[in-house]
Image 1 (cartoon, rainbow, N blue to C red):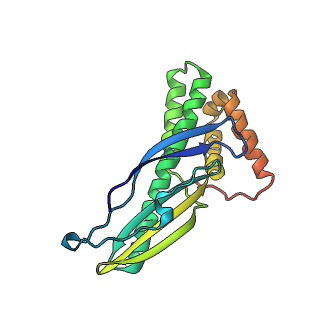
Image 2: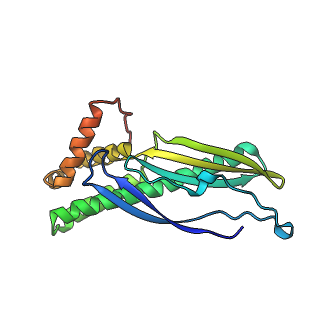
Image 3: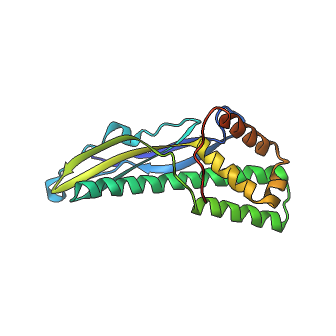
Length: 203
């Protein structure tokens, strides 16, 4: 099987239904190649593995791992997919704060430090509650098992996490709440909260 190098755009919306706040994050995805050494054995990965959707409401990730133990192969694949989701969340946060900073114009050192600290805190403490496993497959490979996993994470949940963390920093909130994009984010989250029961985030 020849390697396929695909550049897949991941379109992230800061809030569902808010068309003016979208972020494009490109990441490089390489379709896996599994070989059996001299025998040339190969495993065909699922069709969904290299076809990540791009929509305004969700973040996606895929992963594959091998183990001689069935459950360990599944556990490793789930962990790898969650790491990829965390990486996508990091890009989401950085893009959002970049736009906030652009609206503020020239920011002083104190504000810049607050933004950097909040960004790092969000990324380091990202809580992936609400992750859904949308596709799953395990195949025999040599003397073991290879697991394929696809996960989905609601962008609305990630936006609420971002908003909650900003609200914890009074000085940063006072700076950002004057921006149009922050107001759009806050309004959209408030509208969603009126229709849904949210999971409490604990940082």
